[in-house]
Amino acid sequence: MQAGKPILYSYFRSSCSWRVRIALALKGIDYETVPINLIKDGGQQFSKDFQALNPMKQVPALKIDGITIHQSLAIIEYLEETRPTPRLLPQDPKKRASVRMISDLIAGGIQPLQNLSVLKQVEEKFQLTWAQNAIISGFNALEQILQSTAGTYCVGDEVTMADLCLVPQVANAERFKVDCTPYPTISSINKRLLVLEAFQVTHPCRQPDTPTELRA
Image (cartoon, rainbow, N blue to C red):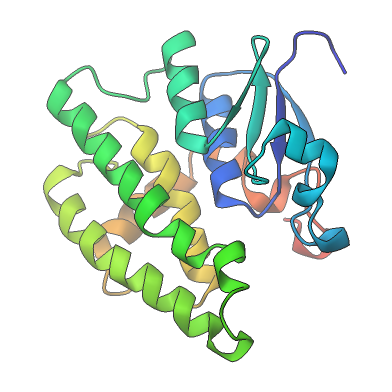
């Protein structure tokens, strides 16, 4: 691999990985992708090599500037601090707090509850309902919050870290057959974001490890 180029350990369908891919695309950062298949061979994230890279055995992980960072929001914040253009956190402290609040709501309050590692602990016949309930509970809160923070996007009229969390979570909702009709604000913001190039090129259907039948 090219010396000095960032390396993203990613899985095409991972919403956490997608957040980071969007940030890298928006900031114009060229990087290499190392696919980590979360299902094949019992989950490649459990290999000794990957566990040495990330003891939590999760994607994404980003090697950049001589360090390895885990956790998608920590990665995005590092990119923001070291490569601040374009800005993903508003200058205004109140708007910045709103962005972090929405990002944490999704990354901490919705996505982990419907993640593969949690669903494996639930009896198979109940997994879909479990995931749907987790997403619906979070979306009920998120819709209400966005009604007071949104402009064109989640917070005002500029793309922020909150938007990087929103789009992958809506994709999860669709995959788990959640009816998004009750969430018009979430749905309209998602639609506006999906036409942006950074969200299109990083989409799970266009990744190096996307299975042929899921490519678009």
